[in-house]
Image (cartoon, rainbow, N blue to C red):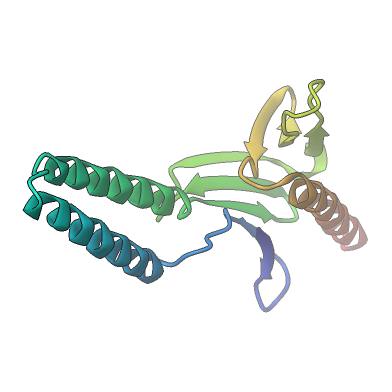
Length: 167
């Protein structure tokens, strides 16, 4: 999902692009606790009936489920910020802080939505400048990616129009 955030003066706007996070950390902990209690209850019942080897495997299953939940939630914290200014377009990617940065002049920037020649492969949304490209929104679905491409093109055009009017 993506949203546009502008400063009060309206001079700089940022597109915040992030994956859809269906559960919060607290929600995942609750689901994990319910699954763990059920699994451990069943495992202990089997162990009391003489099937004690079930316990280590139940522990491994809980460990794998916990790791999967953690990795999914960690991945859902990824953010991409596309700042569209009058002079420059800046793309920053990372979780808590920018781990990757890319800049290009607004005048020369192009927003490309490349469709894959293979039907089931996702399209790629990129901002390009002089042969250099940066992909954004790889975690978005097709409709969101197309809507973001249109919105970015419109926003860049509006910024350039404003810049030309003020000159």
